[in-house]
Image 1 (tube, rainbow, N blue to C red):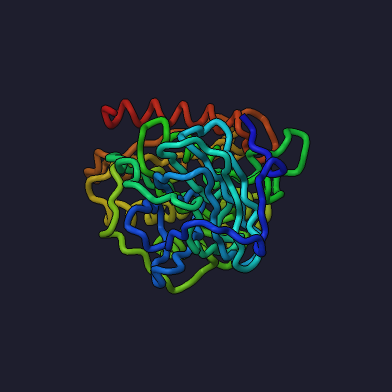
Image 2 (cartoon, rainbow, N blue to C red):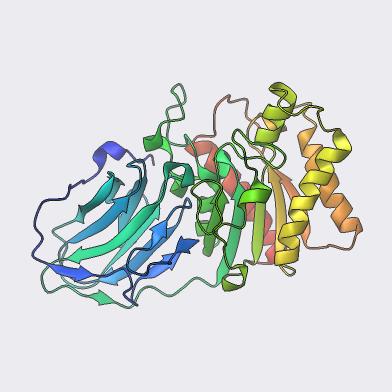
Length: 357
């Protein structure tokens, strides 16, 4: 089902709340993803799919955010209804409070806040919650035991996934990571996901001056920066890498690298990045994916580069690595929700088979 930002329950700052304030450092809140806790009172969310969840009592819920650029969107789900968000927050620049649920019945309720957009939209500081008078936080749902990390570009982010088939796919309101193949796959496998993606990024070259080998180890997704993620703090069981679409465009179509790398250099560049991931996660199962845009269309050499790199690693003794190609449907834009769902079904079945999940 498509989510429409126009259905958002949006409340700008200025309205008074005679309720219970929940601070961002409350131990009953569960955070997921690479979140910057340099200031525990103002954790920053920047990566797509980062989330905050919890259980509360009371008839209403409001969310307090301070968005850097006024470009980010967030889903808010209530009581496990993931078919449609109770609210879509279009975060305005600066600190504001957004009413997202009201008229709730007695007893415990659950909330899940997920970042639809990505680091190129800037970061968002979470400033806490407002519950109805007399409300309180309860222990959150149990943590998921399985973990998947994704490294990718706009496809993995979900750019344009809610756009109409015949419309532009660059509008921020239509970017919804929750419905991308990455997030759909993680939910289907009951796994916690970290999504390290950036629209336009490549392995050898990007549409901007940094590449995934420069970017993959950052705590903050806002541009190329010096923040560093602690890889010891969270270890995935499965890693999915879906890169090379932008390399194809920029090298073969746009001719942005001169001299253009030959086939062996392309394979080596990809393998070098995958080997960085393998060094971090010796026991993880690595899935090297490609698609479903035109890098996988008939006659393209790019799936072969991925397969060659994986074959070389397998020949070197790495048995916990494989490839998957999401088929190109002939659609010229970014994948829409139905294509993400098909890709997620393919990837979910693949991981189930490899991992016995």
